[in-house]
Image 1: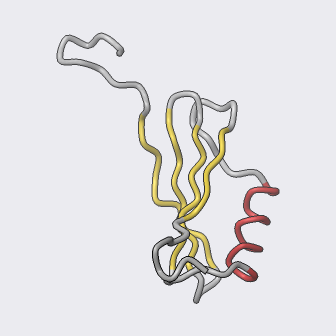
Image 2 (image 1 turned 135 degrees about the vertical axis):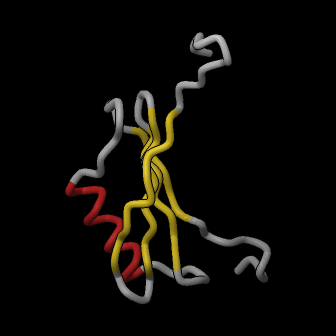
Length: 84
């Protein structure tokens, strides 16, 4: 519909957890997206933003599997150790 000008990369949402983990509902929805979703490419990304970190998962369309990429800290510290 976009004539190649838009690409679906994935989706994100928040959890009230320090380091987020996907719920059963999250994983079920992600698998459904891999099975029924229409998107270009082999992968989509699922991000959950927590209170101090965000978690990233990759959904493989061909293999119908989800792999955890990692957590990334949202709390930045300067060279003096202060949070900012």
